[in-house]
Image 1 (cartoon, rainbow, N blue to C red):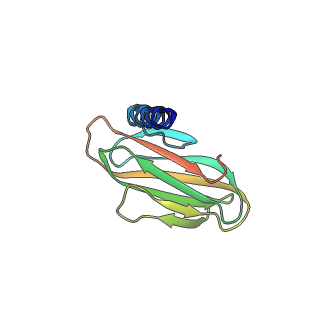
Image 2: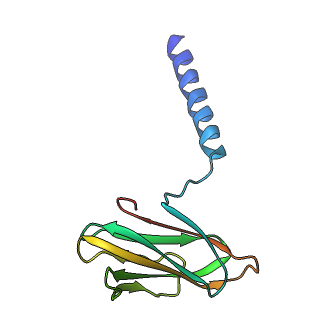
Length: 122
């Protein structure tokens, strides 16, 4: 009888956990949250390690987000201009950089939300 009770308790706990998990919302890791209009861009400074990934993402009204990585002297060292909403850059060496975020395609007239982060944060 205790086996039935334990099995019943385990099943009840599993269903309760599943119910709680289905009620939670997806959390996006981000260091910078931005609001950009179609065709708008902005930049920010960060210190990155060699090989560190810098990535962006945007909301459901955004169909293209681009990232550009400039070194401290303003030279373009890496870019992701693919037509997608999830660009990724890689820092070629350790140091201070500028990241330009460009919103080429936002379908909402009031703009789109975008997020930019990196492996170690900035």
